[in-house]
Image (cartoon, rainbow, N blue to C red; front, side, top):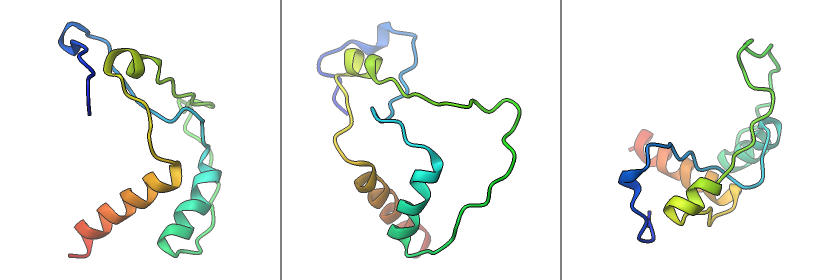
Length: 91
C-alpha cells in the first residue's frame, strides 16, 4: 500500500478502508456462492442487540492520509480472497 508521501506516524486516527458503494450481506451471499460453487441459501436469524443496522464505509480519511482507494470490484476481491483461502486450506 502506498502512502503517497503522507506521514502517517503523526496521526492517531484509525483508517478503516471499505468500498465506496455499500453492500449488504444478502447481496454478497449469491456472489460468494457462485464463486465457490455452493448452492447454499441464507438463514435469517435475529441480529445482536448491539449490531449496527446500517454500515456506511467512508474512505475519505484513507484517500486523504494514505492516498488509497479501492481498485478492484467486489467480485474480483471476493475471487482473490477465495483463492487465497483455498490455497491455504487445501494444500
